[in-house]
Image (cartoon, rainbow, N blue to C red; front, side, top):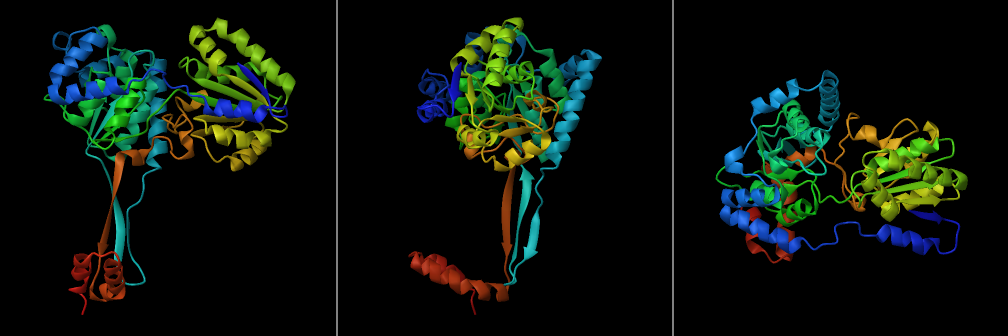
Length: 430
């Protein structure tokens, strides 16, 4: 864990190193993923069966390729009532939040008399990737399926690996709550390739979303253009801006909530109180051995964690913007949280006040937890309804409106050396 002081000599260089750290997988997976994609494109289902036997160690033909809606409904009914209620609460809140994101169609006439507008429609089919190894999260099932449902996507396909043939019942129950149409027991880069190109069994989709390991992320990157994607996601991140009015063990748990995802995750604390910084670091060291995810948290905190002391919390915000974190907690009094938030330019999602832990956003708050990582919040946003939609513009002219704007089009076409463009308009001008 790094401890930095913004007032100390050399801080700028130390912070630059922190910002520029690469935490993605060091192994070069690009060539491996390209080979997998090519084989799935050529071999279809046979390639999927071979890769599943190799990586997940079970036979698709013997165990079954898909999971039925009836199996998902049974898994839902078999849950403990409190867990069933939690899934339903999360789904209701996620659905409501994303329904409010639906864009409106436009249809109007401008001053020239031209009719202009745009129409929004959901894509025909979307593929949702759900990890099945280290990260098997029913919350991600809801976060990916429900925005697609709200967008009006007609066919939603879930791809999830089932290592050694084992199926996660809570993931199946979440798929039932979300209303998925198909579930295929295929994972890895090969699953993304199947969604993009289709096979005899699996019809292709238009958009692919969902988290995954380095191979899944690289497959999405390589197949962008064949299908749409949500984003190329990397290791999880949290930045907490906190004053000394907080309990150190509370902030320690917030930091560890992301550290437990993966050894490459990153947790950073900004505070204006050196003693509080030391107290939080001590609390982290105390809490880690008490939790079942201790090995992962220890590696993440030791290799990527940081505690940074700043002269004032306002001084932390420009530094946060440089990190452009996936999650940003402003653990201060409400009025100060709003004031700090007003200055934030780059963050995937922001959590305001002492009673708003990032973890609540992972489950039941409503906003999507699929967020940009690796400083990509500088130019991209979290998953939303519009990731499953496309906008079609339209235009209608009559003689008067064409006469008003057509000559300018003829002039511009001539300037660009495109005489057929000019003639197409000129032929209609009186």
